[in-house]
Image 1: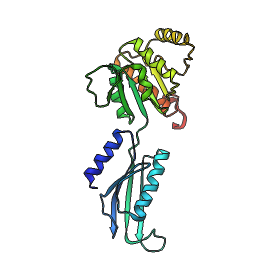
Image 2 (image 1 turned 120 degrees about the vertical axis):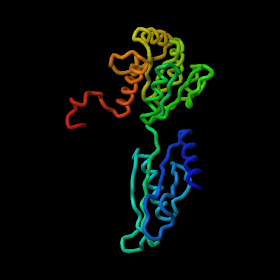
Image 3 (image 1 turned 180 degrees about the horizontal axis):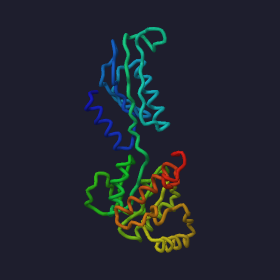
Length: 261
């Protein structure tokens, strides 16, 4: 598989949510099975391309799959093929391999394609999240836009590793999303709703009349208290809140954090 085909396959896998490790030979000395620049793509189950086989490739695959499990971003290692004492095998040379993790942070579902979620989409993608926007309206042109027939079908797109923000064009539609998620026992890592405290209190009361519990862990209104009310400002406050949860931090000012921890 040539480099262009390998990169196309890598992009295709990332678009379908299957992340992996790019392995590239960065340097060689002496006789080696593959030369500098040879690449392969390693997922948890599949392999694309080759970096020459043998002990070099076997080691790259094992290290790559360990990186995927542990969330390690990059690793560089060398394999001694000289056949001398303590070398890995005999081939006559030495190879250096760089492993790059393409794994995205987490899956983010933005329900509603309004100004706030459009801004959120931009921020979240820049920060390395896998993002999709869902709306019931036709003709929206975002690359990661998915049209759905009804907001009460959102639960079908959900998994328990998702971060989810509800911000449709209509508060009653927001209610459909939330009710659907609760009825189907969805428990996202983060669930935020763009709304006022008053409107969420009313929505919560109506749902609980159906004998459905609305957990206190829902962030409604979503976001941190930075007092901005423009779409980009609201989006920024939600991004900061999600990052705080993702990294399990308290969001305090850095000047007040002792020892930089």
